[in-house]
Structures are given as structure tokens and as C-alpha cells.
Length: 144
Image (cartoon, rainbow, N blue to C red):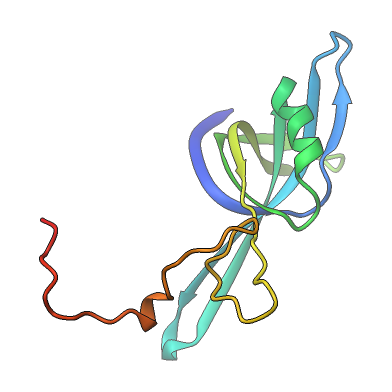
């Protein structure tokens, strides 16, 4: 078995499945989709998706089962495990799994109705206009 430390942004492909071992340790399994986009030949956008199983343990497993639902974006960090095995037809196969050490849900903040500028979060509003509307008087000093 090989291991590699990874960090990345992914989307949950399904709701996490929370179970408990015989020793009463919590374990949550969920499949994640990692998306990659780039401009290929002729400036046409290409996209690639990698599906990877992820395993969360103990308190993190219980927390992810409460917080993450199908389609939710999250940042994960952990060990990428590559396992080689033989299937039932004796063919060599390879699977990948992340043993997650850290994660953070990525919350989406919807635009408020009524002409909000997208800077509002959790009902708090900013007094700053959007960057494209800010104008310089030309008298500001460079802060460095």
C-alpha cells in the first residue's frame, strides 16, 4: 500500500454513511468528486472529475455526518491510500481512498433579495460598495 498527503476541494457525491465499529469508534464513509477544469486546444474548456472514497473517524465522523449532505462542497486533507487487489475474476484492480485528517465545509451565502451586492453574510451588511464601484480620488497613499 502507498500513501500520499493530499488537500483539495471536493463535492460530496452522497450523504455520509455513519457506522460504529465493534469497539464503538465512529466511522463515516462518503464518496467525493474532485473537479479540474482547464483550457485545452483551441481555447475550449475541458473538465475532468475524479471520484474518491473518503473515510472520517471518531468525532470527525459524527460531525461530518451532521454537517455534510449530498452536493455540499468541502475542503479535505488527509492521506491518499492506493490499494491494489484482485477482483473475483482474478484481475488486478486499484482503488483510491482518502483517510481524512481534517475537513472544512464550504458554506454558500445566497444573495439577498432586494439588490444586495453579494457582500452580505448571515444578515450582516458591509458599508463598502462592490470593488468595481469604488473609485480612487488619486490622493491615497500606497500602504507599503
